[in-house]
Length: 73
Image (cartoon, rainbow, N blue to C red):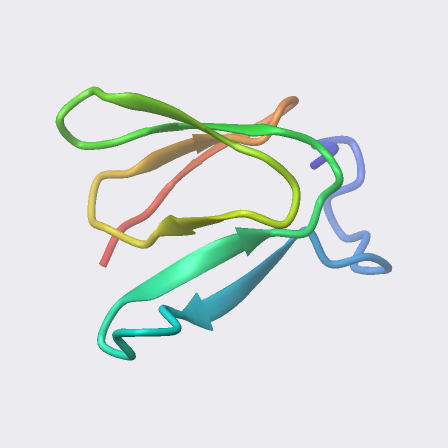
């Protein structure tokens, strides 16, 4: 995600998805082509490669490369 292109919606970088075995669990699938670095609320760190998903949980922070976001539910 390029913070210099605030309103560039030409290519999706993520997709909201349901867990295939538990539809009560929602996630964010990486469509960006770049690795994300995710920090969970317990400060554990996980790499999320393109095509992989991260569970959407309150307090999860995602480093998208050039910008960062936090899941707030």
